[in-house]
Length: 114
Length: 113
Image 1 (cartoon, rainbow over the protein chains, first blue to last red):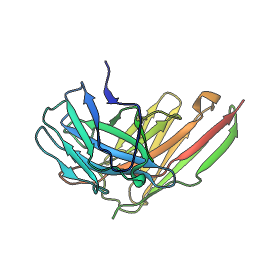
Image 2 (image 1 turned 120 degrees about the vertical axis):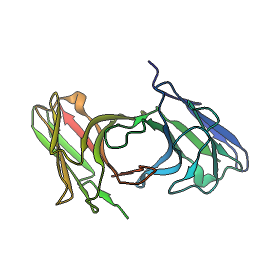
Image 3 (image 1 turned 90 degrees about the horizontal axis):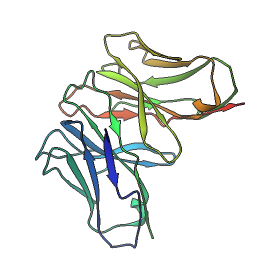
Image 4 (image 1 turned 180 degrees about the horizontal axis):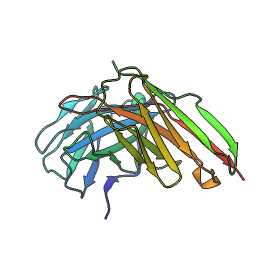
């Protein structure tokens, strides 16, 4: 049982380049989330999805776009990378029973923008 | 706006000690509170989830308590081991259609052999 899988694990981009981070979950979860984790800032929500075909903005959405075309996949896109987007990105998922369902995380993507 | 605080940021204890990690939150209207463990270079692993109607949850050597009225939770680790060394984060889920989590910044625990 793979759980939540993120690809790639590491990436170095130059300022202005674009890329897509892929998150896949095999638990049939409705809810999926993208977080970024920075030293001293903790985990901050970028975008989230409450079901296939739906997306919504989180706490720090600027500079990112997302898509949820299939229930099991949640893609995070950076259209024009900036050094401020250097971070570790985590995808997470949960079922649609928010009071009792824990969050399951992937192992993260470490992104460096030079 | 919900705020979650974990103090201290780091803790070092000798092996075998029983220890308590604290978490406080400002808005008591929560669905649940979760404790996570994060090892270096890894994602977060859910340890315990306490629903708003519950007072505590236990798993092995771990016990988490919740006092909604005072906005506090504690994670108790019995007989600590070097393998418990990690960062421990708490997070609260607030009511609402999106059910987002608000995270604390974590406590980095080091258990010395």
